[in-house]
Amino acid sequence: DVYIANVVKCRPPQNRKPLPDEMSACYPYLEAQLALIKPKVIVALGTFAARALLRTLDPISRLRGRVYEYRGASLIPTFHPAYLLRNPASKREVWEDMKLVRRILNSEF
Image (tube, rainbow, N blue to C red; front, side):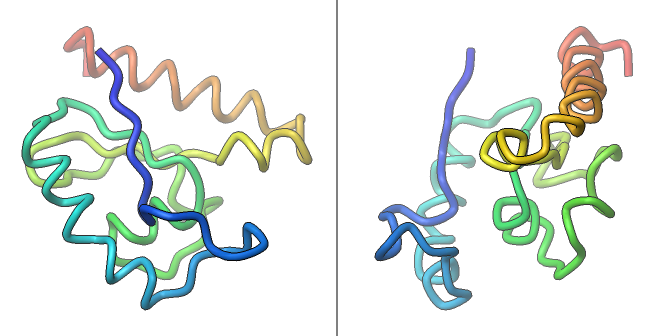
């Protein structure tokens, strides 16, 4: 029911943020994974996932809370779990995003 994939397929040194060329190099693998799985909903956890899939430089705070179309799937960007550890007040926003995911999966959207 749930499949987890990463934008980059290996962890950058010292767990730093992935560079654009690293994301570009791994993107074909992510596309192939999504093509095989054919998800109804994709939840992009964090800035890098949302930016990679939506091909934008907008911050996650501007992207979340809306539904986008991605190759036949509904794409919902939200905050990354690591961000929530540092900013627990944002959990309410992620909860609202997850309720939106549930509505789509239950075809109430």
